[in-house]
Image (cartoon, rainbow over all chains, first blue to last red; front, side, top):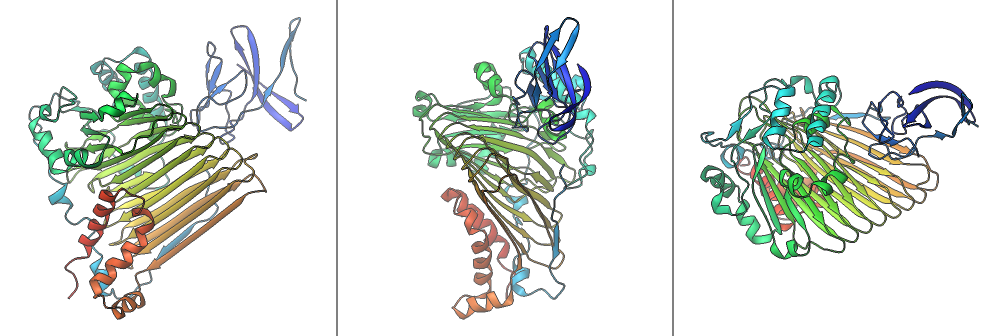
Length: 92
Length: 488
């Protein structure tokens, strides 16, 4: 997981970029349950999920949707593309 | 933890107690005689040494011969439990000595479906508590958990033929592993809170209920939980899945012997009510006053589903329990009815949480508390209406009755509203049993004692009327018992 900061259309945000077996996914580093940091939670590359370290909600990195409570709303996701050797993130 | 926006602490004004108020003292005064007895531990199959470590967790999993994923789940949860600090809000959890608890006690080697096969001592205990009688009279199925495991389980054959599963959680994991795994910890993950992590690490027993689509379970299913050993930890785990259009009412009751040292009960209950299903979950909690009762209960209600918690807290030293409902589908409905008695040395920190996550969802929370003898009752609740949950409606009512000047009632309501087009109401009252009320009833021909009983029963009536007849009678009996003999 790589954590970056970027200016998005909703303002500055931290974004976590994950490598699920060669496919890259990016989500905002903010749990939809209580706004706590999310990206540094336990990452399962095979299931392509990250677990919120604060209350345990499991997020599907491909969609941003929670697979378990207590979070019930998706987190923001960002399209990722690889061009040559550069990872490009669409943030606005 | 979100800081509540509004906090109200109220104590009854200091003045001489009336006879009527004195007559209300002593709730559950027959507890020792009726529920507080204990059996010999002779013949127990296994009792883990006190304290918790990875080896104890592994030994529970080994003992139950569980699949590898469950063993890993337990160990990961144990790490969460160890790494999380003890919560410093609600009741005083610093009193708990985590190393002075037996985390797993197996009283009997087998879980029987034949009452005659249950070990004699245990059978006598449940006979004394009226469990087999209740099963014969008005239940569709019953489970009896003694210490860490279920010793008796039975379900109506007709329901079984319709595909209803009602069994203990250990058996469910062995016989319906795929179904259990699909829903397991999706409602309450192990890292939800410290006590959920503890339960996830050392869980044992509890109920698994599966109701197929369209099946209505006419009479309630009941589980009864009994702690016998001193310094015992009971950690049952319950999962209820109600498929589309199904209907089920689950009731649980619990008691324990009265000891001078503390025990711990920490359950996790997860419920899924699918489209148009209805689930009612009723608790009559009557633990002895040396039990910490720290429970996480949460339900999801999908489109047009109805979820109801009826939560009666009479016993325990400290209860911290806030049943939750996530209304995830349009027109889903949630209801929480909570009643709490806080007597001498008791703190009932109860309430409920409802989250409206879809449009046109409706809910209500009705909380009633009675505090006496310096007891403390707390209402702690959350009502959340998410963005997008338009045209939703909710009403929260919390009423507190204080029976003497030393008792205490606190209200911590949190309301978050993310939509404009919604209808939300909140009411809270605190009252005393007043001389004028008693005088009025006396003028109608009642004596003082009858008048006091009527006032208290009237106060809790909105909740007791939702209980099955047998439980309503028992609740009223408990109240009346406390009020006898102190007038005149």
